[in-house]
Amino acid sequence: MKAQVLIIGGGATGTGISRDLALRGINCILVEKKDINAGASGGNHGLLHSGARYVGADPEAAEECKHEGDIIKKVAPHCIENTGGLFVAVAGDDEKYIADFPQNCSKCGVPAKYVDLKDAFELEPELAKNTIAVYMVEDASVDPFKLSLENLSHAHSNGTIYLPYTKAEGFNIENGRIKSVVVQNMITGEQKKIEADYVVNAAGVWAGELAKLAGMKINMIYSKGSLLVTQRRITKRVINRLRRASDADILVPGGTVSIIGTTSIRTESLESIYPTVEEVDFIISEGAQMLPLLDKIRYIRAYSGVRPLVSLHDSADDRGVTRGFALIDHEKEGIKNFTTITGGKLTTFRLMAEKTSDHVCEKLGISKPCMTKTVPMPNTSSGRWTEPGLAPKTWVRDSSKADILLCECEMIPKSAIDSIISSIIGQSGDLSLNSIGVRSRVGKGPCQGTFCSARIVSYMYDKGNLIDKQGILELQKFINERWKGQRPLLWDIPMVQSELQEAIHCGLFGLEMEQNK
Image 1 (cartoon, rainbow, N blue to C red):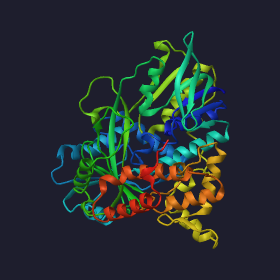
Image 2 (cartoon, rainbow, N blue to C red):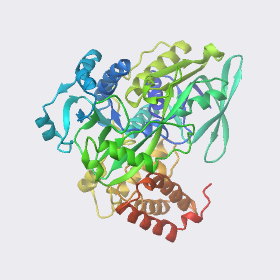
Image 3 (tube, rainbow, N blue to C red):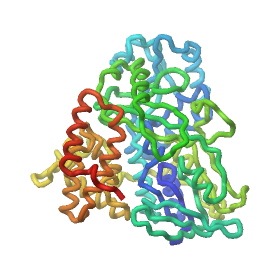
Image 4 (cartoon, rainbow, N blue to C red):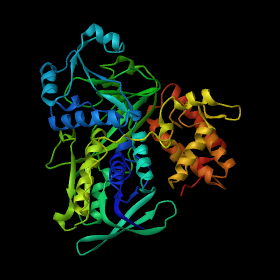
């Protein structure tokens, strides 16, 4: 296979680069060793920062967030819920930080409006009674999966080839240039070579490991963060703790649920990442200081991600490392057609993609401007089913008796599953239960896939998408993934529910007896 540019990494930045370059008329191949948003892009809050979180310690990041947040709200409004946000301080919080907050926001051009406490409790009744200061900011909620799927869809419609479950295994380097990249299909084991004029490393937390394959070294720091998902939505707005950035101080409304987090724990492992009971207990106790309901409400899932941070010096506190991004031209180290883009945040993914694409174009001698600042991102069928509430609305409006529900928690009918399957096949993706889960609300409701997984697998057998034991293996992979997020939350009703899940999937299907290859 050949392309002008090979992009390695299918997160928000990688898909953003593919869209940016495709709009400039550049032929690209995007490879991802798993599926869309398998790394940090799929393990975050889903918060579109106003910049206010960074005004105290990282003014440059604050200004970037403000600028990029405004652009994304304008060009991709269908991926955003423009909730607004509140920064709230409770008794005992740092009074100097509270006093300096409005001035620091003003210096960074980040709007922040003081809210009278009486008005604040009317806006968000679940705020703690000992709240002492509230400011309104322009935070929003963003669907990171929809964002990446729409980026990919727009890039694909402009010629980009997407190869999921395709891992870069090695580089063939001649005369200081990467001549080809050896990739392996992680499902079939097939290897092939991809020739490209330029190679972009957008592998997120795996950027350092990928660079090593080319003999390059990047000083990466891996910071694990865990988050909890409540069964129902708690607030209308994003709620931030008004203090220096710390753990468990942001609550983000995401459709029908709320997400509270996160932690920041240095880790060396990139593959065995999961939330612990200690993290869960800590997040709840800290979060409950600004929203006491968090101490009582039911949680349906926990999950973890790893931040790809780049350090220019040793730091004991990962909160102190910049959330800015690093664009590294490896020509200085001897390879002329290889660049790494890493660090940054979901909010600044478009800017990261723009800077990378500008750099690639300069290297290739192509003079075409970035268009992602002004060209609207199309609202396609590829990412539409990740939107909470869309499937039930569509089903109620257009349903027929034959269009049965396959997922009752999120009310997803078989017609929606048909649409998702067609989208995956159309992009030459891997047709699996996890791929359907990435592109929809399947498995994200209170039952966490207990019932819908078996129904959808059965339906896929009926359609001829699965044969022999494929369905059992699909169930095993899907349930294992959900189980990682359920395990640290097993008390009260979730414990009872997990027993039922075990009875169905182990007692009936015997999943624990299967060897997953």
